[in-house]
Amino acid sequence: MDLKSHIDKEFTLFFSSLRDGFHVFEYHIDNKFFENFELSEIKRGELSVELCLEKKPDMMIFNFKLNGKVILPCDICIDDIDIEMNFEKFLYVKFGTDLSEESDDLVIIPPYARHYCFKQYLYEIIHLELPMKRVHGVDSNENSLCNKDMLNIYRKMEKNDNSINDIWKDLLKFNES
Figure 1 (cartoon, rainbow, N blue to C red):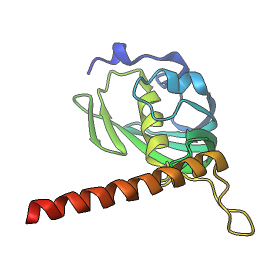
Figure 2: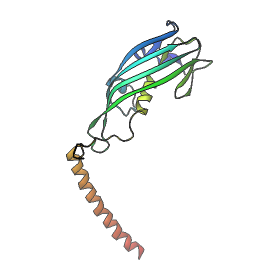
Figure 3: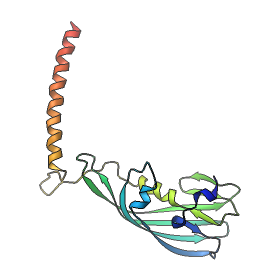
Figure 4: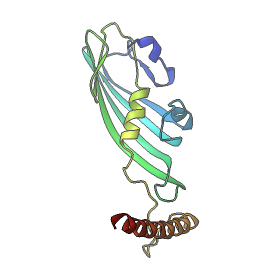
């Protein structure tokens, strides 16, 4: 990987001028961040990022604290649903011979590196924190908060599917005889 091709000044930490010790930085993620990733499942969102960096002579420890929300379509009614996000992740950046990703939370960079771009890392951890199931909840009476019109359409389609399945069952009987 070429370090120069990964420079995105907004999400690049120029650490060479920092002293060893702790440093705190703040970043903001908005819709524009997700637009930069063509295959991003997330198209809209607002997240604040606090980066607590511990710089040591042979490594750096990035402690990312993310807080905010992303907006995704509901799995059932496809209306927008706000997904609250509040999590913390650590990334260890060590100095070594070549640029490589050893694991999800360990990156090796050359000793001559002067900066590190963590934009891709943020993108990946945000997506990994998304819930598997994304649906509107229910109200106090256990009624779905999904779009009622869409739920009605699904019910009609379900009835049609059942009648089609019945026709196929009848046709299969002819095939068996």
